[in-house]
Length: 451
Image 1 (spheres, helix red, strand yellow):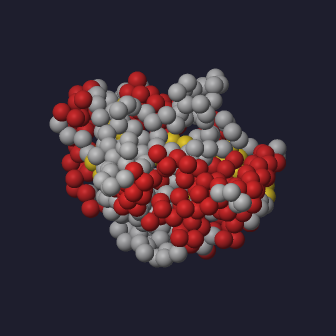
Image 2 (spheres, helix red, strand yellow; image 1 turned 30 degrees about the horizontal axis):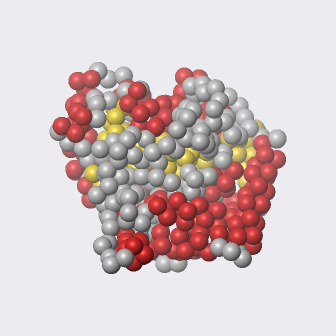
Image 3 (cartoon, helix red, strand yellow; image 1 turned 90 degrees about the vertical axis):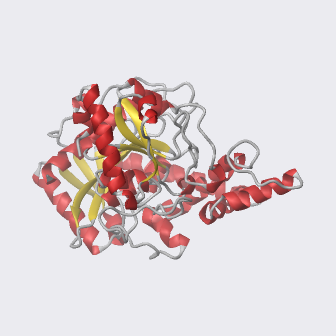
């Protein structure tokens, strides 16, 4: 598959041919289920002759259906473009196809989608990760040049690791959330999934920037990262030693080999410990579900998508939400409503916010001594469909990623090897807030070392 950097250099007539070839490739690999909708004919022309980028089904593209892979939003069409889509169009890119996802971005396997599951392109009996599983599978299968996903607790980085591609979660507030259907407003970030680190930097440069339409958008000076990439910079890199204890032997082996490669390349490695990741998980699921219960209250059959007709308004709300939401979404709404309820708000939600502050402080302390943090992305390779029966067991697949969202930091997942069965293994760099240049330089350096 042609890279994003190469595609941006093509003349318009070749981009048109590229889209035709891409559509053919998507059709040939339809069984993967990465896309829930592709554009053809007049629709391709309508959305411009820019380089085609796959879009997760929770990002608004004017005139497209946007359903968050949920029954409750079937029939809803976006009335406007998300800011990231406008930024893409201005820079020679065009939206090309909606990618499958976990319903309302709630999941780690893309199994909760109304459209059915997406398959891992490396082993069709295994999950592609989630919630941006469709976007990652499309890139990993070679049926997308690049894609946009959203990361609430690892939902870009974890599927990127499972599907053998690069996934980047920006610093909170550097990429506008205007036009992204909110799961957890203080955690969500749109980010790129690409074939390599340089393409991720290019796409990040395109979508980032201050947006007055987003009240959380950082009003700072934005400089390009991609034109200053330097893989030869040397860094002091912190390895979170206690994180490795929960990883499988296969992940530990590949990760330690990557650490040794970084040492040989001249980087200084220091070993640090953080709070047991169980505290990250507990904090995340209280904060995220509380915000989700508030954000999803708007989907009631009155304004958007599907409606179940009833004798009265209260019954209509109840039946619409009962039939429209899947089991995982209902579970998280109930949990979020509980932790925000009278009598439990202080015991759970306030305590979780205090723990979140502690997690952020830990990162700040480590960054006083190190330029980057290097850590696993997942405790195992992609798992088989149906192998995680317990929702709590599924939640633990995010143990290495969610702390980054709680602290609002930038992170990037990149492939570092494969296991004996040929399944991809990823690792992530984490940087200080707004220091994406260091993040990309470190990741590009490791990518070059391992290539």
